[in-house]
Length: 289
Image 1 (cartoon, helix red, strand yellow):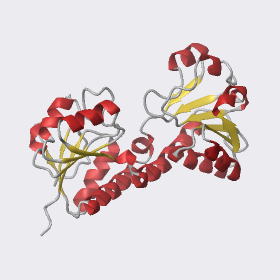
Image 2 (image 1 turned 180 degrees about the vertical axis):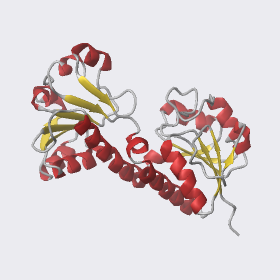
Image 3 (image 1 turned 60 degrees about the horizontal axis):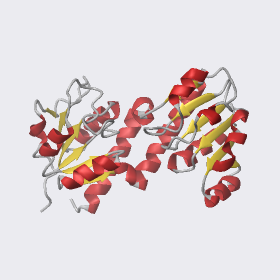
Image 4 (image 1 turned 135 degrees about the horizontal axis):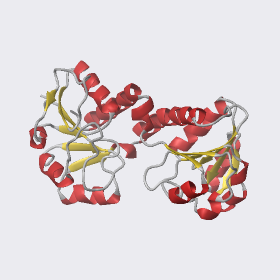
């Protein structure tokens, strides 16, 4: 006989509201803490205390799980959810986190909590890159006086998000270049018809572009690189903290810097919720639940 499945959702943005609706439609018992919205289904148990989630078999945390390693990210609530209190409530549950820092991963292990970072799962991260890429294109169009068709676009990084973003930019007629470290990635970039730019040569090319999209969560653009930007460039930051650029120097130089964190939850929360649900199904399947 299968163990009963119950899911707690703690914190998060609008995509997690849509996830509660989807889980209820699928007949799964859901409780929430640290998220307030009028669209929460009436069948959902809204917990008044964090410990009320302790009997749930699975807990889904926000994206990112924490921005400061001190509290759970809960932008749709006035609750302060301390990490240590969360660990107490999650002691007997399986936790699905996202964008977990090394500090958070170590803390989960030290508290002997079963966990998984869903962004480590290719099936989730690749699908999640689709609304991220579409949202990046939307932000680019909203923050520039030129169209993407015929524009010169540079994508920094050729990971899961970089690959999909470059493909979609090329699809709307942009002239796409991609920066990468790996010689294998550079070969693929060439094969796909993009202009390959090795990282050591990056500064020599930065002044050519109308749009720069960063997907690398490492600061690779300092003052020298920023000085190479074209005056009209739009820089869109897609990477998680610390991002790929010196933000303070961008402000000093007047660069059109567009922060674009958590785009799936902003531009496509319903689609993003479906991806999270599929992720949960994969984990339940692996657990033979």
